[in-house]
Image 1 (tube, rainbow, N blue to C red):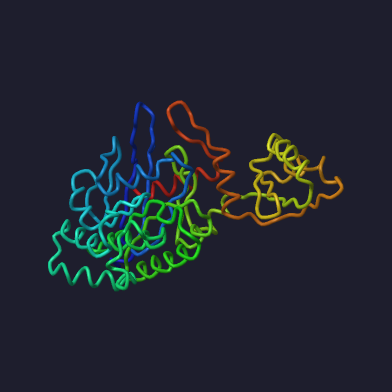
Image 2 (cartoon, rainbow, N blue to C red):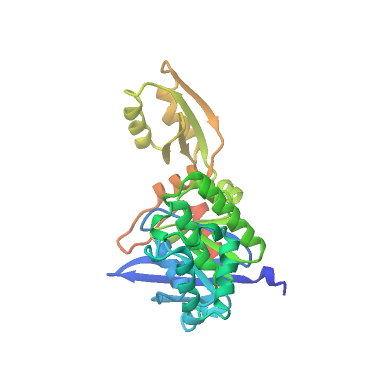
Length: 334
């Protein structure tokens, strides 16, 4: 079998409950080696809990599967030695220098030729010139680079990145993603959670979850196609009238979402006739310009979270077509 076609992550039925509520609920996930998978969803959707179960830091209440060919239930320690896990918050010592932090990480992994490993990592991430600088004095972008360097010290085969670019400026985000694509080109698999749509578009594939369940998965094009959204763009209108108009449109039958994109509002639904009936009362208003628009990822994800329902047991619902694709993807992970 071609190693690139093998799954780095292959789990099914993954479930974790807290206080009787399923934070992760029957989740299936399969990511091939060398792929970048974007993990998206609102805060509290179960992304971090899933990542922690994948690397053996949390034991699932139900489900099974493998990470790098190792059992997530019984071989968590072996998994962690082959995974680089970057948490949401900077977790290194701020009163140590860049080199001292990396040397500490190298000791934890008991790396042979530790000094050479630190030197190699400093060069690889462009940190050599700053190696004596205290971590606490670094900007957000440089802290991010140091955190990634620490993840790569032990030459992992899989990176689990939990909102790694939160609070980082756009230039540093672009540089970070260039590095991630370079690592994927070397055969490293990446699972990265993010709230940024421009970052989602740079992933090979995407999984969107809410209330612990997968609502959509596939490539960007597949997710947009399967959502089958009809979108109208609205431009114009005064600051005084738009808030009331937005609320009226959100409450109209057939409207799944109303969201601002630059100087336009996107009004989305799945039934073209219903959506046209919803906007009809406002089509003739002076100063308002309506035109059909192409759906984008953000339209889809806003609509998905709008259709998801947090049931008493913590499960989520999605529109039938989208849910069917998510379930097919989950079955493939088994």
